[in-house]
Image 1 (tube, rainbow, N blue to C red):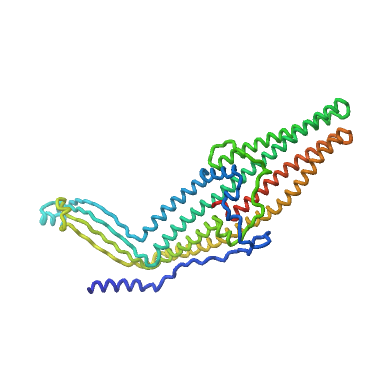
Image 2: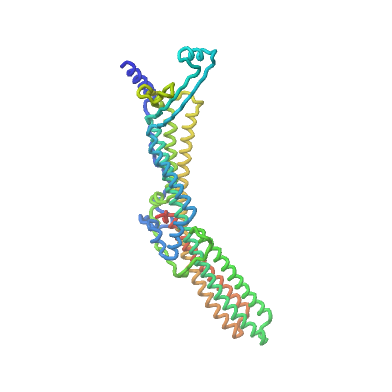
Length: 470
């Protein structure tokens, strides 16, 4: 009884050396968030990012491409494997609070010198020149989680798992957006190719008219050469567009995790439709929705748990060890029960005193790392708000640009007809016709490009707001 009291007193003295442990509670850092996004009239709580990608993109061909990409894209598959690996570590972390148990079997034969005290004692008491020792035992060790060190280690594992999960969602948003961007770029190239082929017919007609006028003496050979050069330039443009289409098809195929191949299209750019009246929602909601921002917040939570671990390492540790099994100095009666049974239990408290400042350094470094992650989290939020603002202003600006470009394309297309009529009547020269055709071609190509940019800005806004992973 007295021994038990002494043990309890020893534990009490060691634990009393530290009055208490401050729990490393997480405090949400102040974030640089405005009440509403710039370039929005009101702070609307609804957001287009709440739509699933199948609702946002209603083109069946694009939906099929995105489905294949989510299933087969290698970056996304790698991310999902990382999630699976982290999940296994999380399962293992749940067992940290349990003791370590092992089992070992050993056999040893020692033969001391005959002239040694051990050798002479063996010969005297056992009548042999060697000693045997056979042991089979279970070993147990357990550390009490007094200061929350193990709990914080489990929290680290949980945060790491959630980081990989949010990381996979972030990659999916990027894959979905990249496939949509590539698809719309492909539709733009199709449109530009159609425009170039239509313009080639016009340049052919101009060349035929110019050749007839040259044959009749109404123009010079320079006019024929200029008309021919314009036709060759249009043919060159068609070849370049066909090359770009093939390259874009290859890029899309790789994005969906397939070998380069043709990409079927059932609609033209003019038939595409995306939500036009886009609501951005509130910046605070965007922060909780964007996977990459959420991932950075989880990094901060992990570093907070690491501070708790570093602090707990400075406090006393209560460890209990035990072992038991069968032991004998003869093989024949090794497993003779109960004579060969043995067991021992040891409990102790160790308090780090001088570790060459290692523990203090670990704690200070952990605190600094947490401060760094606070800054990184704030930076990720700021970048996210900036991306949304950029997409909003681009969408509004491109809407106005598209209207002006459409008006310009219509005006210049009408100018071609006027120039051709005047040219046939002798009231205009060949340079005016060629200039009108060139300007019209460039205007229509530019209009197709602006339409694609506007579609891209809507996709960028959807991704920037955190859409695409549902």
